[in-house]
Amino acid sequence: MNRLGVLLVMPWVASAKYARLLTVLFVGVALIAAIALAVAGGNRTHRVALILVLGCAVWALWSSYLAANLQLARNARDLCLPRLQCDADLSLLLFAVVSVAVPTALCWMLGAAPLLAVAVFIVAAALGLAYMLLPLWIGVPLLMAAVFGIMTHGLAESLSTWWGLAALLVGFDVFRWWQLRTATVVPREGMRAAAVFYCYRQDAMRNGGWRSVTNIFLQDSVAPRHMNLKDLGPRRIVSSLRFALGGFGMPKPFASRLLDIARLLAFVGVFMLIGLWGPLLDSSTPTGSSQQIVLHWLSPVLTFGALLTCSVAVTVFAGRARLLWRKTDAELPLLALLPGLGGIAPGKRFAVMALLAPVAVFLACTCAVLCIATVVLHAALWAYVSLVLCCAGVLALVVAVTLTSLAGRPMHTIEYVLLYIAQLVLSALLLLKSMPTDQYHGLHPELIGVVPAWLLMLWGIYLITLAVLAVYGGRALSKRPHAFLANTP
Image 1 (cartoon, helix red, strand yellow):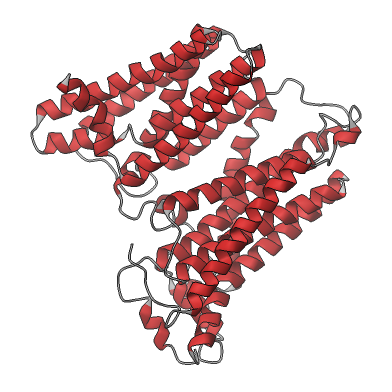
Image 2: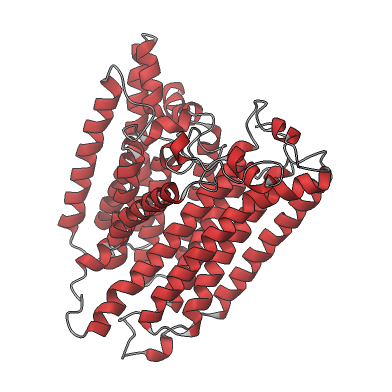
């Protein structure tokens, strides 16, 4: 029994603190949703939804902290502890049995198809582990492809398809696990590094996100040809602060700015193509009139584009503020000595403007481009209102994160992640409800652009929450000696 207890707690001990918190949070929410579905009724729709919700819980378990056993096994090999290496593998096998058997038994008791449930849970577990064992630039598109494939086809596919996919993913996970476990040297930085190794970076989540993704736009060192040294000095204090803070909002020449935009478009374009995986596989793709084709393709492209650019804006700008104001070195406080800051209040105002002006311009340009493209769809007014509301929500989130960081009371990682997810979920629901699609065009035109009241109520609660956090951060900032005091991580 003691050995069994050691195997069960091994991933918990080996994983990072924030990984444990995220695991408890996401698995707990999924279990609450599963209980609600079980109480709601027993028809086929509820049973399928129950399998999907429990599958999300299994995926969250495997994509959060179970892969930490890999690092534990590698450390045990370096320390010549063979039993610990074996225990790390056995612990993973034990969780593989438990994470599939327990939810399957629950589905069987509630009348869901047990064979389908087993296959779905194996796929969810294997997909979660593959996400952690692959580099992020491969794992995230793989995950998105799986999600949109399920959204397109549901769980109505034959059992042979699910079992074939399960065998393929499990075989890959075994190979990749053994490859990373036995390799003498593995990349821990850059685009080739597996996502699991970033879980051990002290700044992985605390400083605003995984650097392998964000350092495309958050360069710490910029070549001289990419700098714009004009209009810097005491008379241009906001531009000087933007230059000192760096990142995407740094003043740059026009050519360098175009290069940043090209990188951003490439980043968004790759994920947008993955997001269109579902429509590409849809057998009902229209081939008739040009209007139908435009509705079928342009509407999801704009939806995915809006969600991805909003996601990038939060990561690049809000993440940058959390990163800089949580550094423990003396670089940040030295900015208080810049000439031209003036008194305490003007210095704080200049710091806020230097951090928030770039994101405001970025979101305004993004919203304008999306609204111009929406004109082609002949969309209702709610489509434009939804785009503006999504960009306004991102701006409110960045303002709240920035002000709380400057105030010396930065958001906890869990709070930051929850607000981030809430922004993406609410934006997705709003855009899916308001953007015209060929699904309803000509059949149910009254459903185009109709946003339900409950969704607007959720948006109101979300924006009020961000406004309270921003006001709270602004008041705390007004009490600080100056805006450039670093916070203890």
